[in-house]
Each structure stands twice: as C-alpha cells, then as structure tokens.
Image (cartoon, rainbow, N blue to C red):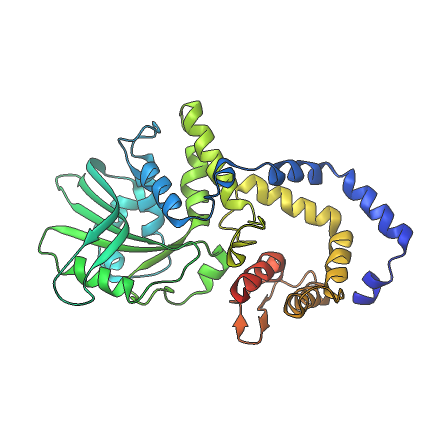
Length: 345
C-alpha cells in the first residue's frame, strides 16, 4: 500500500482532490470544523475550570437551562453504569433505583471549587465540583454526595484523589459518597482500563464522551428554550473540534475531548469517500524531511497499521520510545495518532 500511495500520478492526485472538493460530506464537515464555537472564540475550550462550570450548571436542577433534574439524573445513570465496580456502587442497595430513575431530587447543592482544610499536613484540597443530593426513594430519604475531580489536560496533582477520598470518607454524616474521576479519553481507551487512572482506585472513572452520548445530546431532544439549545450545541461542538490554534500551548493542540453522534457518522462517511487522498497526504507527511522526526515516525506507524489490513478488527497499539497508547481498534488509528502526539508534546 505504501508503494501504491507513493506511485500516485500527478493526474491521479489532481482527480482525487477534485473528488474531495466536490464531496458534499467534506463540505459539511469543513463548515462545521472551521466555524469556531463560542468557547473557542473566547479561548476557553480546553480550560478545565470552564468545563467544570458548564457541568455544574447542567447538573443543577434549579439553573436557568430549564431541564430541571434531567442533567443530574443522567449523570447518576452514567456513574452507576460505569464498568468500574467500586464498593460504593456494588454495595449500594439503591443502584436499581438510580438506573431506572425511581427517585425524586428533593434538594440539590452544587458547589464549584469546594475547599476543605485541616490542620495536619497534606490534608487540604479543592474539589472541582461537589454535589450533595437529598432524595426521595419509595419511603426512604437517602443522601448522596458526589466528589467530582475533572481533568482535561493536566494529570492528577500530588495525592489529590487520596486526600479527597480520605477527607470525605471520614466525615461523620449520613451521606453516601461517590468519587468520580472525569477525563477526555475515548470510550475505547476507557473500556481497556482495568483500574481508574487516578491514584485512589475507589474513584469511578468516566469520560466526556459518555456525557455527550448519555446526557448532552439527549438534552437537546428535551423541550428547552433556544438559549439552552444554543449553549449545549456550542459546548458539544467545542469538545469535538481539535485545538489547532498556534497560540495554544503545544500539549493542547489536537486534543479531541468527545464528539457528537452526527459528526461521527459524517466523519466515517468522509473517511470512506476520501481514503485514497487522506492516505496520500499522510504518506507525504511521513516522508517530508521538514517535519519533526518523532511526528513522522508516528504517522508512519499509523499508516502501516491502516494499510496492513484495513478490515482487521483486532486491537493494536502505537508506541514510540517511552510513549505508548492503550490497545484500540484499527479504525480509530487517526484519533489515537493525535493522542500519542499529545503525550509526546
């Protein structure tokens, strides 16, 4: 396949470019990805604190979005259907009620940047989002506390999750605790994990893609006002657009946090319609001496994985020096190549 790509004639390349330019799917995607979302315009699309603020807003039943408790209900469903069997979930006798939605939210408290402080060293902390719920389930009134640590670009700080778990587990109150670790990794990488990536393994790791699939896109089908529709749509768009701004920090570039269902389908169709020219462009990059060697090697490895057997459904992984991806399907080679470049940069 490498020989086939490298031996494309000039006329063949021109024809492929014409086909690309006339592809309606390519035009739709170009309009979508070249139109900046509000978070991108404001330069906050990868700012962790801004994502936490949006999530606190969508989870608050009393907020102006008009969704009521839809957001917090879907969030609980995501947590309780996570593939990480923490004791807080497996031993929770209310799990079926949470999954089926057999509860009512009586009181909800959502706090951003919640600070706790104790006198002993290394016992303080600042929680990204603290959610405390008072619920009504049949004849019971359980209380639920969700400690959410949100990581967009940075990794966990020094023993953060250990300190959070120790502090909230030591509180003498009647709240049931759930500890959640939110990251922008893909569903494939998340499903391949055997334990959460954070230090304390009592956290339930979820990803932004699950928020898009199970909470944000379904919210757009609810009877909401135009402003809320716009905010959620713009937020989903910002998650799916690679950060290519030259002013962005190098480690921010290319990061895709999650992507909407319609965009996924369009991109799959785009790949199917334009494989030849995409592969030719990647090949040109891989042999361009002006590109950094590490970047060329990663693209070369990606091309090799694609072209060896495009139909192969087995899992592979990319590696270069000390950097390596989790196993993934070959159909996700493009996304994983970007992820590996992010790790290296």
